Image 1 (cartoon, rainbow over the protein chains, first blue to last red):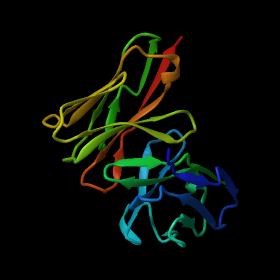
Image 2: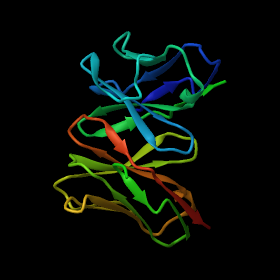
Image 3: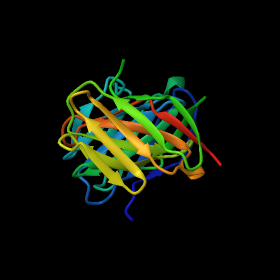
Length: 111
Length: 111
């Protein structure tokens, strides 16, 4: 069964460092998303990406965040200068038609 | 209150009993989806119900949708210990748009 894969599964980084979270969406999917979930809280939308550009972003997705599809298959989320409050699970999702498939997530810990 | 609120926040039942979780939302929707999340893991899509549907079944799952009340319920029949997880509803306002997640219900099924 096709699946969305995310790497790494866990990343620890120092405050102020840049991190890149990677995702390989399902190959024939057209819409790509990043969500995050702070420990014990609900899942929050960050950004959606369609036709090689951002189609929607939330207020969380400020100038510190960026997304790219560098090679037509991978989909990355970059956080330029991490803050303690960026510590969360980050989920990538891809969609065709109506069902969004989520990856297993990257647990980001900022220390 | 926020889009996609579930109640109860926590539910503890015995194996074999039915579990019912409710979700309310605020805006008009294209569809409503239920996801399951085991502790610290990714989101698993369970079932999707479109705005023009009132009820849907999938195995031991039954979902209802009342768009006049902007509410949905998820019923898990004959629960098993392996059903222990957090369950989230998520609404999609238009096709391909972001999913807005609720706070989740933590279900514990005791053997």
